[in-house]
Length: 276
Image (cartoon, rainbow, N blue to C red):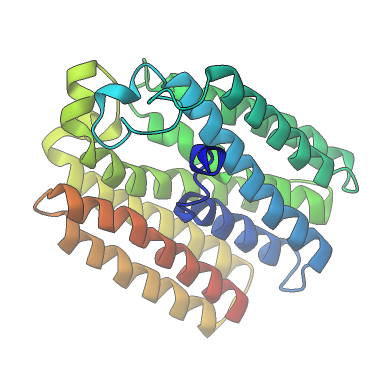
């Protein structure tokens, strides 16, 4: 189905990269005992908002994607659906997502407005911002302060530290992703972290992984998480090292494999938090 392809239901990796930090925040905010209804709301809402973001991204990039090998056959770019359909799909999904959080407190609803603004503006940052992946990290991690708000009715410093950690993580995995399209992006004048980092791209990715995991570790240890948490962080660190082996030669397909493999890094961190 064309609409399913538009919102990437056939490619769930994006939803998972949003879901792991959000679930981690819910578990940390609730001291390991999250309300299952809240977990369900955030899980479904994450998928809906990621799907809405994909539709808006394709609308914004409809004249750009045709010049990129990997995206040339997307439904909107290839003319299989109209631009207004992509916008309509995004609006409907965003409204459904907002409807889900109606039972939650007013702070969570207020933060959701900021989340929508960030998600819809991200595609345009690639036109002028040298590190749009950092902005993506905010968009992909805004479920973190929302999760804390839903549980505590406030957003403590730990939530913002975790959001910063997510920015570094997004810089790492989306630079791997951008390395796949670097040649095409250079031709059409887009700005990406893979272009900005240049020959230091691999080093920058590994430093971003290190910064992200260090910040998460600091939050977990401050909250008194135990050996299970440390084990999860060690597994995630080993996965990051494995990614270095994948990307060090800058082979396009191996870089893409590293990007997709970040699902397991996020899962390892979440499992460590649950066990901790």
